[in-house]
Amino acid sequence: MNKNYISTLLMTLCLTVTSFGQELMLNGGLENWTSDTNPTDWTKAEGLVKSTDTNTGSFSAKQTKDASKGRVNLTQNIPKITVGKSYTITFWYKIAVAGKPVKIWCNFRDNNGGFIGGNDPDVLRANLDVNGNSWTKYEATVTAPTAAVKFWFEVRTYSNTTVYWDAFSFLQD
Image 1 (cartoon, helix red, strand yellow):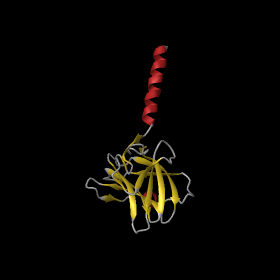
Image 2 (cartoon, one colour):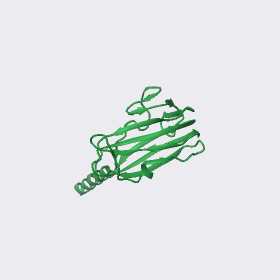
Image 3 (cartoon, helix red, strand yellow):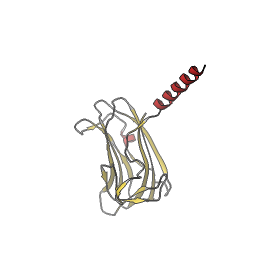
Image 4 (cartoon, helix red, strand yellow):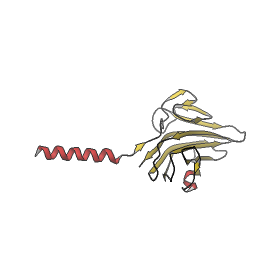
């Protein structure tokens, strides 16, 4: 009788563990910083300062773009993508000063770093809603197309705008 309970418990534990997705984004919570302007594990971090105005955890990233043309980016190159697998992107943002748009601007990449199409561009490239200086969750699910080996995750802040970023996730479903 005890063997049946133990077997059932082990099977339940195995199924529970395998049902959770795999997090592929590093330092998505922005809790680790090499300096007050550079979060660890991010490919590009422009116009950032570490902030204690958070949605979760101890720190977020405050990103500001001045009045000059152009943009500042927060980027992570995520490896180990599997063709045909679904990935859920989530993060929290708060637009404190809304001049120009704030955008998510992502794509899958091939082995040479080249852009791969195959997904709805409105999911991977979209303006984020101006949210009245309150924390707002963004979520989208994408599927890796043929030849995808990397995902280029990027959020962009344009002229005269300040936004806070927190709790980024890129989860393999």
